[in-house]
Amino acid sequence: MTRRNVLFLLTDQHRVDTLGCYGNTAVSTPALDGLAASGTRFDRWYTPSAICTPARASLLTGYSPFRHRLLANYERNVAYREDLDEGQFTFARALQEAGYRTGLVGKWHVGTHRTAADYGFDGPTLPGWHNPVDAPDYLAYLEERGLPPYAISDHIRGTLPNGGPGNLLAARLHQPEEATFEHYLADRAIEQLRDYAAGRREDGRPFFLGLHYFGPHLPYLLPDEYFDMYDPAAIELPASIQERFLGKPPVQANYSKHWTFDTIPIETSRKLIAVYWGYVTMIDRQLGRVLDALDELGLTEETAVFFSSDHGEFTGSHRLHDKGPAMYEDIYRTAGIVRVPGMPAGQVSDEFVTLTDVTATILALAEVDPSPAVDSRSLLPLVGGEPVEWQQDVLCEFHGHHFPYPQRMLRDRRYKLVVNPESVNELYDLEEDPDELHNRYEHPELAEVRERMLHRLYTALVERGDNFYHWMTSMYDVGGVGYDPSMSGLDEPTYVGR
Image (cartoon, rainbow, N blue to C red; front, side):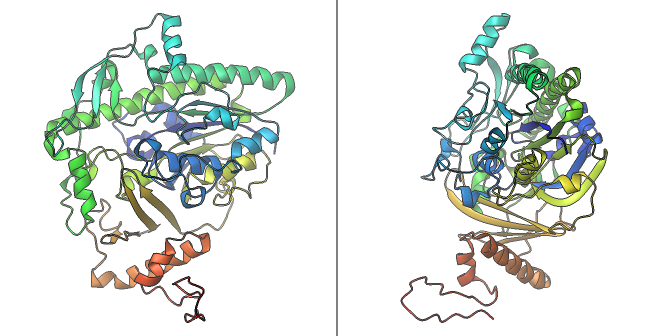
């Protein structure tokens, strides 16, 4: 295979059910729908962890979060490490060593001190978790074009338990579309594509370009056209808005208070969803501009294109906003689309894959050894339509955001198990209860399922080397133990595997 260019499109906090190609007939997403029609759409694509920095570090390294150890966003850090090890493997360095140009336009968020440039990526330095509207390159962009600066009104927020104002959820942006940060990112990506295309013609060097949007992460800050694009009265509220948190970990109800859901009128909740949909459409239009530029530059037939998100977003589901210590499908299942020239179009895969698998896939496209990406598996056999045996479940992890909160999740084709060491565990029958409203962990009729999934999760954690399994060793009947759980080394082994 000729070494492909790679264009990687990544959004932030993007619900899979907002895309036409995933079944939403109300939201306009023609660019991503067209990409899916020309490639492979993955229906069981998961984030390794529903928090920005851990997920993005997994993409960069091909390591699970417990292994690369960037476990929380630095803005809410609770004493976790904030940068990768100096010698950590990354696909960026591997591509550069193989002769690739590498660029990244947009959100980085993979550490505090080292930027994308420190990993060899071309592109403007744009720190932080939200649109950095004070970034020098963005301000220069506005000045060069005579465009107005960032300004907002019509703030939407709830009330915190202490009586103070809640987090800003949305607002009206007083800029034309061409002045938005989203339009700016598309322009910068197109400029980088033109530069790489010229280099490809001159010396034949392939390229990797990441375009990473900060949205549709809250707060949703949109110009009038998109703020008012969708009618709130036509919004069907998610079924899980009737969540009562009965039999659930108490932290979920506390998180609902933190996100002020019950202080916001239901009409405003509908408006928030409508504005979120407008944000999705605005980003889709910008992605369409970039994909059109790929065509105009004659790069489409030699460039693999990926689209995904680092994780999903609640947007009122389970009476929550943002993301957090609740391993629901809303934030763990995301969109995943891959188009490789010469491979079948219009495919739909129902295999369990993760964002981490992109790392080995990029390396395989570049004809670089993918084995250093130890927790990643190339998706090319699936994209190529080859018959291949694949895992029948997916394992995800969470380590906390505002506070340490370790969780592990195992999801198979029907059931989901979530282990919460400080609280009650969760078991959902996604066939009977797709909205995950009823925790059936203690239900006797599912005892066999619970035991099977506990044992499977335990075995998978042991195989990975994820020390979360030590908790499960002592707390659950997960079979024989082949080591001394005290790990003291002072006694003869008293636990023998059976």
